Image 1 (tube, helix red, strand yellow):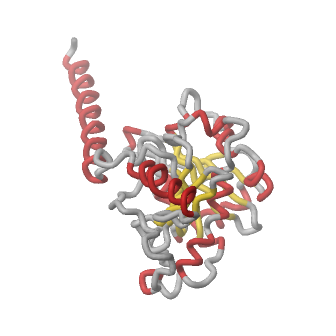
Image 2 (cartoon, rainbow, N blue to C red):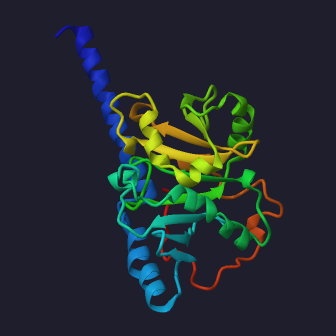
Image 3 (cartoon, rainbow, N blue to C red):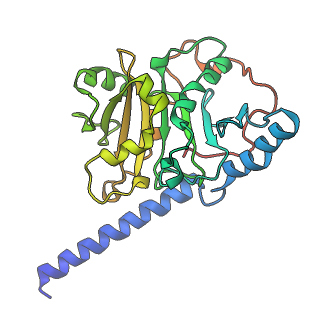
Length: 278
């Protein structure tokens, strides 16, 4: 091998080791190696049995047995909630999401945004809210969960600015969100409620990309439509497709600040783990 060839090989090796180090660093920083099934245990061993036996979903705030989901107050953020299926579904890569009878989890999560207003003590405008699902690489839990929280103000501004160019076909946003590339697709309220939104990821023209490599977000557009946001895992760009980055759990756009507002949930309606973001 020539000297230049050896240098190229060493550069590739150094890049690979750096990538592995970044992944390990993320695992240590988030603690995801400690409680990867914590959400599943809470929903399957506490919330669902309590709802079935006593009509009390604690420690969740809601368990909808008919539609197959629970809503849990997250310990990260004053107003953040999680929608979690009561069926075992690991995440975006789960084939069960594509089944004809699969619950409309995104639509149910959007409907569950009222828990944010309930806790805040006054209505929160839809423009201030976003949903997010992290990719298999950007999550810390091995149970599908949808983050229901405030949208990051910079993302809100970017979507408002790009709104006129977003239509019903996937297309890359001209400007990155949080420094990362996203594709956007407009959908109407009827589509959110009645269509298999997860199947729409198959229409993104990025060859040989597993569905689990995507993070997915949802927010409103100025005319009342919704925008789906998809971002792809890119290891060498240090991007783990954690779509939760479009949210700001501190809700800085709300006045008064949520941290100054007393919780309105019944006692015990809080996850009993120190769950890291993901």
